[in-house]
Structures are given as C-alpha cells and as structure tokens.
Amino acid sequence: MQCYSFIKTITILFNFLIFLCGVALLAVGIWVSVDGPSFLKIFGPMSSSAMQFVNVGYFLIAAGAVLFALGFLGCYGAHTENKCALLMFFFILFLIFTAEVAAAVVALVYTTMAEHFLTLVIVPAIEKDYGSQKDFTQVWNSTMEGLKCCGFNNYTDFENSPYFKENNAFPPYCCFDNVVNSTDTEACTKKRAEDKVVQGCFKQLLKSIRTNAVTVGGVAAGIGGLELAAMAVSLYLYCNMK
Image (cartoon, rainbow, N blue to C red; front, side, top):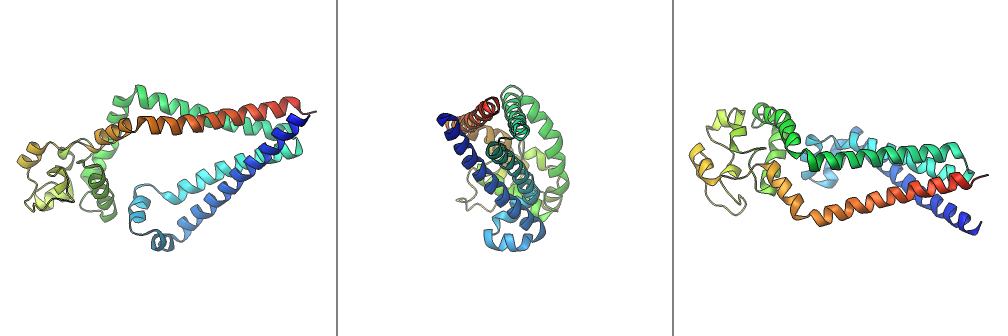
C-alpha cells in the first residue's frame, strides 16, 4: 500500500506539471494566433520568419491541447482512481509513442524517399515564391545562411524562381561557403555556382543531425523512456485499483 500511495502521489504531481505546461502552451498559441504583432515585438524579427514558415500559433495550440488532455487524464485518473481516465491516458501515450517510433524508422530507413517527397513539395514552392514573397524569401535566406547551404538540392532549384528571372543570378549563398564573412559582391552566376558546389540544405541538415547524433539520440531515448515509464505507472495503478 505504501508503494501504491507513493506512485499515486508522484503520478499526480507529474501529470499536474504536464497539465500546467499544456495550459501555458495553449495560452501562448492562442495569443500568437490572435495577436501575432505583439508576439513579434517581444521575440524579435527572427520569430517573423519562423511564423511564416510554420504556423507557430496552431502548432502550439495542438501541442498544448495534447499535453492538457494527457495531464488532466493522468492527474484526474490517479487522484480519483478512475480506471477509464487512466486507460485513456495510457492509450493516448501509446499512440504518441508508436507514432514517434514509426517516424524514427521512416527517417532512418526511407531517407531517400523522404528527400524525393520533400523535393516534390519544396522545390515548386521555391520556384514560385522565392524573390516574390518577402517572408518566404527571408526564411530561406536565414536557413541558407545558418546552414551554409543553397536551395533544397542545390542552386538549380532557383533557376525558375522570380529572383533569378529578375536578377539573372542565383542567391549569393549559392556562391559563398560563408556569406557572412564574404566581401565579394560579384553576382552569383551559373558558372560560379557550379564551381563552388555549395551543398543543398537537405543534405546539410542531415549532416548536422549525424554530427549531433549522440545528442539527438539521447534526447529521443530520454523522451521515449519517460513515456514508457508513464505507461507502466498508469498500468500499475490501473491493475491495483479496487
């Protein structure tokens, strides 16, 4: 009974923290969606690019809703000893864990397929919007500057873009290994881009992930371990409830 009471108390406290995190994410997500300009003023210009590339508000609302539901079910189920709530808590965690494992397997085994799929989606967007849509262009400029890369595959992704049609040149990131430190103002022509052979951002991103594989793997393993522990605890409480 002492072990059961201890685990029950820890479960309530742990899920209450998850519940509070969910409430906080929901609040920030709603704030960003309703009053984006105020959010941008506080977090600066970089947040503007991020918000255009991925709708941060909706993402935060979705993540907050999941954490809110998980925290509430776990806390309520443990406190009131409600088997139905604990079972739902276990089921949602199991679905999340399964989705994470499936995503990891796809990322490891089907990297080439993922690259082909993303190429079909991202390259047409570059050809359509780079140079004409300010926010989209800023996002790609920040990405290429940060990763020292050019386009999704390489410089050829920009050949049909509004930027190339207007300037008859590729973005400078396609001709410099380090744009920030470069003082070269010469246009990035096709010949210069071919000579420089700057890697595409997808390959550069994969390289960065592999470089930090231990850190990424450790974080993923830690999250997976917590989820498995939470599922085990919920099953323990479920099976020992009267």
